[in-house]
Image (tube, rainbow, N blue to C red; front, side, top):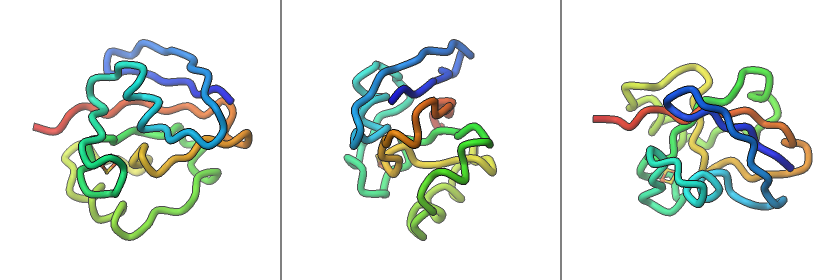
Length: 105
Ligand code: FES
């Protein structure tokens, strides 16, 4: 599958991923600086924050309570915020569009 990523400057890129890959790791490997993934994907850092294009939100697995709590503490939170470490790429997510969220102060 492919994921279409918009960076904080508004530049789009299409990235080819393998099924089962974790979006946070994909973003990390592709040098999106704002995606640090400090905690390694255990829902405790929120440095993997992305905005998911609204038409894709329903296709993602529901948020774990810890994800909701972490996101609600972010200044840059929006209704379509997700932790990219909780998004596992599948063929159903081919064409997923996400925007990298700005780093928190
Ligand atoms: Fe830490 Fe996602 S990488 S919460």
